[in-house]
Amino acid sequence: MNQAIEEGINRIVSAVPFERVPWNDKPSEVTLAERMEYHNVPGISVAVMSGGEIDWARSFGVKEAGTNEPVSTDTIFQAGSISKAVTAVAVLRMVEQGTLSLDEDVNTYLTSWKVPENDDWQPRVTLRHLLSHSAGTTVHGFPGYPRGSEVPTLVQVLNGEKPANTPRVYVNMMPGTRFRYSGGGTSIVQQVLVDVLGKPFPQIMRELVLDPAGMVHSTFEQPLPEPRWDSAATGHYWVPNNPVQGKWHIYPEMAAAGLWTTASDLARFITDIWRALQGKSHKLLSGDMAEQMLTPQGVEHMGLGFFLEGAGDAARFGHDGDDHGFVASLKMYRASGSGVAIMTNGFAGSGLIEELRNTIAREYDWPDYPYKERTQVPVDTNTYDAYVGEYKPESGKRWNVTREGDHLTLQVPGQNPIVLYPQSETKFFAKAVDTTVSFTRSKDGQVTELTLTQDDEESKATK
Image (cartoon, rainbow, N blue to C red):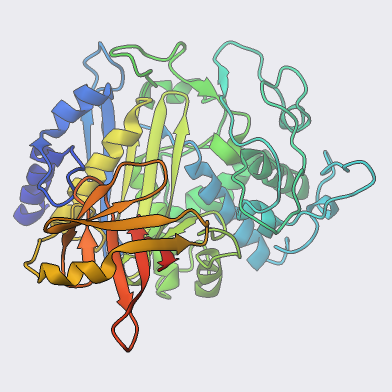
C-alpha cells in the first residue's frame, strides 16, 4: 500500500466527526476507537473503493467484547438486508439465461407454496415487483431465531406457521402501485429460486453470485456451519460489553437476511456491478442488465434490489442491513466507482457507520459530503420586506416568513420560527437544521414562490 493511502487512513481513523449541527460549523472530531466505545460497537470492518477497485480494507476492534481476539479483514459478519441485493443479482442472472422472467406471475414458478388469494381475488405478483418492493407483500423484516431454538422451514415462515415468529406473507396492497419495503416479498423470491432450480438456496447463491464475484469468505448457509464459527464476529446489544445470547441468530429467510460476509467481499460484489455498467466485466451481469438493475422501477428511489440515491455526480446505489446485533452498509457512486462497505457487530452500528462514512467522504472529496460549510454573505436587508408573507405548499398548511430586525425567520405550523441567514439575495440557510430556502421572483420583480430544500428533497410553496 502506498504512503498516500496509508496517510489517508490515518487521517480517517484519527478525526471522525460526530456532531452534525450547526450545519455551517465544523463538526467535533475524535478517534474512531473513541466513537466505537461511545456506540458500544466492539468491532468494525471497512473496505473503500475508487474507480471500481478496492483502494484499501482495514478492520478495527475485537470479535467479541471482553475478549482479545481482533477483527480481521477475513472476519465474517451478518450482512442483514444487503442479502437482498445479492439475491437480486442471482435472479437477474437467471433472467439473462432465459430461466426466469421479471414480469411473469411468480405463481407460475412456485411449486412448494403459492402467493395466496385474498377472498376471491388472486394477486398477480412478479419478480420485478418483489425486487423493487412494490409487490404489496406483508412482513417488513425478520428477527431471526436464537441458536438452539427450533427453526422453521421457509414455507412455514411464508405461512406464518409455528415455529415461525413472524406473521404470514400475503398481498394486502395493489402490486405495482407504490413502494413498501418487504422482507416477506424477498422470501418469496428465495422460494422461487429453490423451486425452479431444485437446489438448496446457499448452493444456488454460491454458484450464481458468490463464486463468480470472488466472494471467497461469504456464505448464505443458515445455520452457520461449525467450521466457520471461529471466523465469525459476535453480535452485541446496545448495552456495553453485552454479546447476543448464543453469539448470533439464525435466519431461514436467507434471501432477505441470511448472508455472512466481509467488507472486502461486499466491495468485490458491488464493484463488479459497477464494472458491468462500464462494459468492463460480465462475471455477474451484462451492461444492459446492470443498467436495468440500477434504473428506478416506477417506485421511490428503488431499482431491482438496490436503493438509488442522489443525482448527477452524487448518484449512488447501495443497501443497508441489520441482523440481531449486527449493522452493515454498502454504497457506491455511479459516476466514479467510488464507495464503501462497512460492517459492525453492534446494534448501534448505524450511528458509527454514518460518522465513519462521512469521514471517508471528506477524505476522498465525495460530492455529497454532508458537512457543507455555508458562508453568510452581506446583503441589502431592505430586500427582505419583499419576502415577508404567507406561503401555501401543496399540503395546504401555510408557512410564514417574517422579518425581525436584520434577519428573516421561517415558521411552519406547530414549530417555533427558525432564523434564516443569506447565502445570496434570494437563497438562505438555517443553522439549526439542514435546510435551505430559496425565493423566486416573477419578471416584474414580485416574489411568487418559496422552495424549501431538506435532504435533497424540494418542497414548493406559493406566496
